[in-house]
Amino acid sequence: MTKDRRNEIISQINELITELAYDNSLFNLTADEPVSHPIEMLTIKECMQLVHGLSEHSIRKLVYQNKIKHIRAGEGKRGKILIYKDDLINYIRG
Image (cartoon, rainbow, N blue to C red):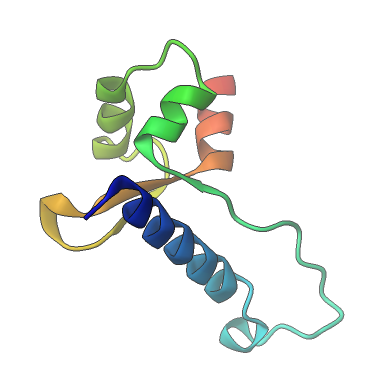
């Protein structure tokens, strides 16, 4: 699988997760209730680019310690780790 194809798949997964997160029928929400903003998910490398000075090892450690919210897209150890951008930023800010 090429890097471009992998990034395309991750982008599609992110879009689907965002759709599911804001599907009002899943949560019995009315149309009048506001939706704050779309959920942004980052790969570990994107997290490293966002937060300079934070290594891949440090980010993985935060994930394994459940200090930042994340999901695994795929099965087992080969699944891509996607991290909630807001949670990462909130964790870094303290």
